[in-house]
Amino acid sequence: MINQVLLRPTVFEDETPLSLEHVPGTLPHREKQLIFLAQLFRSLIEKPGSTSQRVLITGPVGTGKTVMAQRFGLDLVKIARGRKIGLRYIHVNCRECKGSLFAVLRKVMNEFEEQFPKRGFSSEELLQAIMRILDEKNLFLILALDELEALLEADNSALYALTRVQEDRVTSPVRLSLICMLRELKYLELLDRSTVSTLQQNLIELNPYVSNELFTILKDRVTLAFKEGAVQDETIELAADIASSSGDARYVIELLWRAGKYADYDESKDVKPEYVRKAAGTVYPTLRDEYLRTLSLNEKLFLLALSRYLEDNDAAYASMGEVEEAYKVVCEEYNSQPRAHTQFWKYMRLLSATGLISTKLSSKGAKGRTTLIGLSLISASTMKKCIEAALEVFSTDVARKRRIT
Ligand SMILES: Nc1ncnc2c1ncn2[C@@H]1O[C@H](COP(=O)(O)OP(=O)(O)OP(=O)(O)O)[C@@H](O)[C@H]1O
Ligand SMILES: [Mg+2]
Image (cartoon, rainbow, N blue to C red; front, top):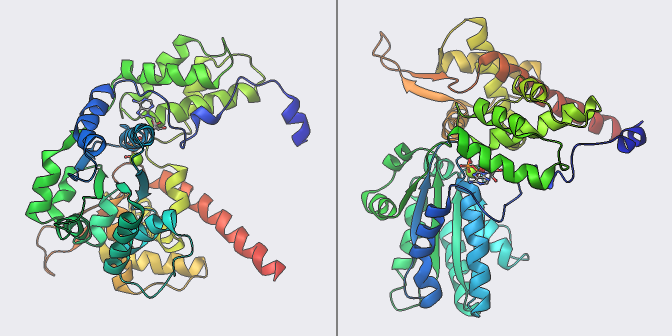
């Protein structure tokens, strides 16, 4: 059966350029920002060790924060290599590290020494050890902290520790620079004033893409990923128009990939606009598989409890207590031990930092203020379906493991 599918014709030439990991050679509509970055980091190439840079890139979902930092990192490392400068660019996603500075630094350390002991170090010591390695090997490091909100929510002194380590080394060469990525500037409120002001000096704000910008971004990908003639401009235009309400480049790329899959399913030689419309009914701009994959079981149970509560009660927000009650019921259903209140609170903070839920304080009632939790970007019923499907995979995995052992 699989063999039969493999023999079928396809509209795709190579799907890799449509994957999330792909870093295109050029980034249309981000040229000015890349030049600004290059100007900031110029001294790192011309006078390595003389200054450290701290840059902040902000912008809503899918505006190119991650890909821009990666493209810049790759290009700068290449140039440095040509000049025999030991420059490393390390990109770490703080959400995947669950907002832990220690986990972030471990990822950095792993790039240098895989054998480094896993335990017995504080983050402060780990950071010092990294700086020592940089000194020993005469390396300069650009550390890109992606989805920084997770780190700020979990530990608001983490960034301070990273900026201070450089300042403490007055006589040594400057080795560590930072590129931070953040969706919303409001998270800066969690930081001390001096860190905020350095970051604000080098601020790159990205706006959502408008329809014709999404068109050019998509057109580039189509040329790389689809067979010649398989996608007409009309189809690309439609996808760009649909995605322009969010301005999210990831969404527009996913839309077209999915539309291509529908074309293949129908054994159609071209990706008709109708396939894009069909794809728009199944691809949700804000709930990415990538997100679901990195959520822990309890975070999924939290989201399921919240979305069920909101749907059943036709409510916009639920109180912390109401969600916690619903969470206990869901835990029972999935045979999982509910976590204590403090841990539950942490899940809420982390999910809020990643933009999956929104929180606000209630107006003052009989029992004082309480935290209200809602879903800002996606409907409760869609969230419920996505999480249930993700948990389904989980429970069959568990069942399978049980059967094997
Ligand atoms: N100017 C551009 N040119 C080409 N591709 C782009 C451009 N901007 C974004 N993309 C592509 O769109 C997708 C989303 O971009 P990216 O992941 O960088 O967004 P983001 O701002 O980091 O989003 P998030 O806030 O969700 O992390 C990626 O596949 C990226 O390669
Ligand atoms: Mg990103």
